[in-house]
Length: 517
Image (tube, rainbow, N blue to C red; front, side):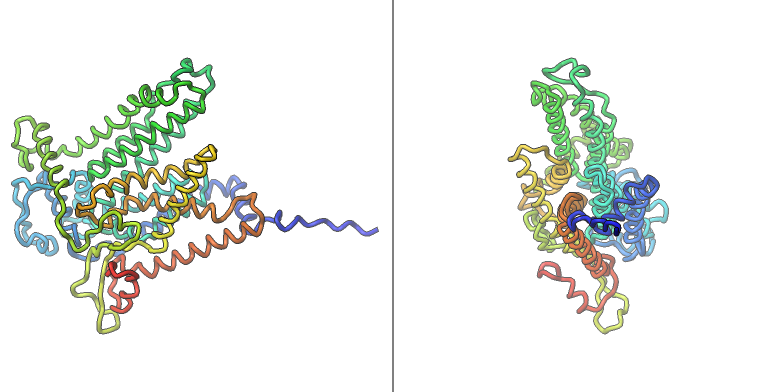
């Protein structure tokens, strides 16, 4: 008798080669441990290279560096923002006598971001362009790592987290704002750091709220939790965001609301009878104290230089330094409310999803030779267009999935809600000020949450393990092709993000819309 021929699994049951390799790696403890630290390391190194190489170019103040670099050096020298005389920009380049007077200057942004820029300047001196931008470059690199950690905690997937971190690592908007001494890069870092701490608090708090009734002596109200160190840490991080730019307040409010809502839903799952009231009126005030008071304290500490000196703007408006600081803040608020002066690169928030008017941060007046007669060197805040538009579509997909789950009354995946909370905090408030002079590069604070949303959407395209073989093969190949094209587009745009001198006609190829010029 002949031996029976072993039956092959049905085609839909055969794993793909990629799936076999993935499963073997993830199931092997040694491979799993190595991958858990190797993946974020590689993503962070790529981000660092793209942000730190040739960081000193251009050797001049670019765009609003003319404000923040000078204010940073003034803080380092005086403890507050002084007044600069004529030809200050040229003096920074040539290290002539810096025309800094000790009378206070009216400055409309809190000091923390400028203190961070000053730390880098303290290493190389006021004329060292690498020193100007070192803090923002390091914080921009760290933001990529934070995006990996947030996505990893949200999805439990190393692959999704790696994709999310990689998308931000190679995106032009993040690269440009990391290589320029502006405030929006540090603002983004602290917002994402606060978001990570909020997630850690959620993961540690929800199991406590969902314990059996034996551990919950008040079935009507549930427990009131004071011991939430990660919520305090989130308050410090989001307070630091507010101490860089006031728009950090939107993130503080949005994530504070997220904490209350997740507490309420956890109490409902635990069987607490009055779960909405318990979350809002019993745990809510406690969470407010744990989140907002550290944020306020952090913000106040950032003004220490102004408080302990006597030369800052409006410092002499009242003998009580805190009342004088309040007077200064009233003047800042009046400035922001009335800011509607025209600017060639102004872009209202409704234009941002369409990417109609990126900002030209720097245009080389005497670019280096590039092999042809007509050369140009530009630094523009154009993001990778493929990442940008796909991310906007992915955010819409997350909204669709969220609405479907809500209508069907199914459990809602935090990977759907959390990126949307971040996007709401960093975008929706700007829609309320259509007449105000604002810029497209403010969307750098949205970019981390857009990257996470796109990574989550790509996971859905790639398919699940229980999908038929042909479905998974098609999905995985689609995702890999998309990511390969994304990398090529970033390579194509990298000269425009870093100010490389290129032929004029080659630069024109990067301007896909009229407003990109």
